[in-house]
Image 1 (cartoon, rainbow, N blue to C red):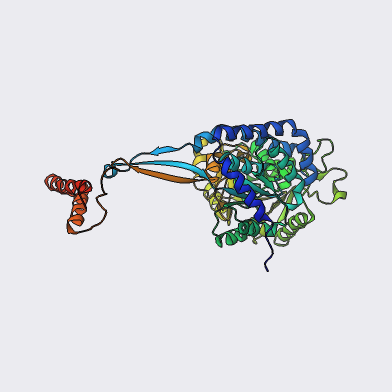
Image 2 (cartoon, rainbow, N blue to C red; image 1 turned 45 degrees about the vertical axis):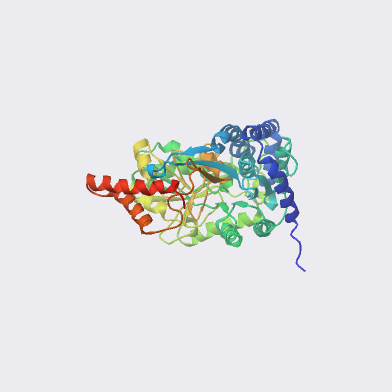
Length: 502
């Protein structure tokens, strides 16, 4: 006898609640999301404290990358969702079908399963929860095991809005089992954010359904510094995007390619700034970088550093650890390394730690080539004083998002879609594209001549029918005006067949 999947009853309950929720006007659904935003604003300090204790990131990181952007996003989603979800008429594609009229409407999937990561345990799941609810779905959220307490904070925000019972369910289970369990229980769509390796497993499991999946996976982001860049700004950007959340961001800067003309100046400025960074526990806000999330993550970063050093890399700069940081074990210094001539893991794998690989390149062309030499394609940045040049370089990068003279912050802009190329996944979250991902298209086609007994292509078929359609092709695309007019007359006779008896 097979063991019963405990999620089946949860999915059944969610499906019952969703049937009514789908009929609620989008503007009324938006009111619940605005209530969630107000709850976030009221509890902002407490939420940042929870994130600090669950992940080790600083309060400033928690506020600037999770709490504040999420409140802003809630307002944007609530305002934009009615426009995205409204039905619209499709313009006719050709006079051939003048008697047909079509409309597109967006409808919910039904029950959406969301598996969220530990690195942004508050912001990432709530973006998906809000867009899923706004588009008429019920939601089952499975947060990362190590940040289950933040999952409870997410649940508090959602339930405080007064959302109808059953529409939102928080579940707890080992991450390796979640994808298969949700699919077996009957979710209609699965949204996964995590490592590329885990994403491949989720996709294989989903194919058995088949169940549509949305995958936001890892990265190995590149930063290109051209000779006309504002170097002080570029250095500050590299530090922000490389060390924020202790580098535990899928879009963290991990590879920096600097044109040789300004390489030495950039390296020296970066080394000086890195040496001044303060890494340690956030007790009084007076630190810049918090801890790695776990011993496993700490050992992984150490291993990547050891691999680089064993293959000829050298440490250019290293930050300092404030008192108390070293003793707690997970506070890894922010480090800048120059690779040697041998290949190193850090140039091909996702680091997920406060480590920046600094590489000298001859020119813009080599920088683009090296940046694209990665199995990932999440985001990248180009640093130059010329917007025209920046856009040109950006157009050559095989990534989902390119930022000029900044990095990583577009994830906090609700209006910009988020997602990658290659091993960084597909589909999009955030923006109108994120709302569209949480809904599907239904097309309705009506016939203005529905009182006619039949369509001209219906049975019975004959040579006359074939020749009539062939004449239609000639009337549209043949040569010679006389020939086309003659063909049009034959086609019109076929058209009036629709009004005759069978």
